[in-house]
Image 1 (cartoon, rainbow, N blue to C red):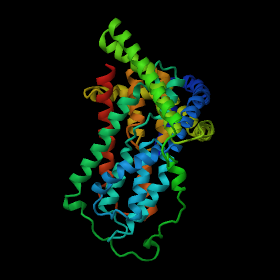
Image 2: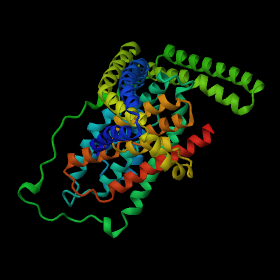
Image 3: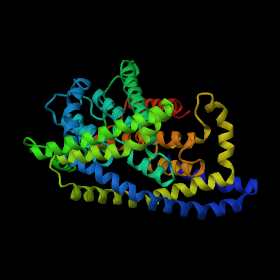
Length: 440
């Protein structure tokens, strides 16, 4: 499907430019968009390397282990059909904990393992069980507590005055998508049409392949360490002193702002100035409490960030050139003009629709479209803020379904697709409502 969309953008741009007489604009935009993509990568690499380095410090300090312990009881309630000591439960705990921390690539092997282990409890091979469908619904809705590092980096590279402004609306949007997906799962599973039934007997080429074997990352390496013995007095004193200094500075500046500015403006300015430094302080203190060699850990995490930046270069160039051509031809403006009256009625600008439609299909494609929107409309415009929020509202639905179901040999996903798409829709409306609430 993504192949068709990309080809449609390029061919549509050339065809409409031939009709509208804007072929020179399309030609100029090919070079401009390719240059813009490479420049953007250079600009976002620095902040991405730094942020992933700091998050690696907290990860090595045991934050992931802490998250995993807290969500395990909740998962036992959500998945009563899965025994608490079954390997599938441990894999799901790891998958969700890593996703909450914002490390989707690390979460994927545990998600694949979870699906394969869940299939061992499956009475109808090839048919998704209720735990599988719920696991997929939660995975594609991708609730994440930490700032979306890549989106923040792109916003900073685009010149945003407050790159972290989309953190809270992203939390709201991804919470809406998770609730929407889970609620739809519980509603649809009661319907007769979605009940689990055995597939017709397969033979020969239709019999399917056995689930693939793969190696999981070392659990201790992924979860990190954490204090295995009581903290030394000097370490406790240093952590307490830093927290007191930060709290005192925050209180002093807050008092000054609230006595000289209106309440909303004072709060906005305070959050804008303090949220990034406080996040860094908190993550580093976790590493300090976990006895992490913070510099070496940050460098190791930064190296991962550099690898991510290099990996997305071809995706970003290809999609940015295609979208740039489509916009330069005038075809995108025509499409937006046709759809805007309908979407504006529910508060969604038509300019955001390409992003909303592409997000379930391709993370790299949506990333590129978001970057193009920020460049065209500005990172701090409402359209820029909403597109940035949408980027973190859900996962790539069709990719997750294809990858995870393929790993377990699932051919009948039952109501998984509808639950996941409901999460995508809930994330869109949640992002829109959050951005209107916070930015208008």
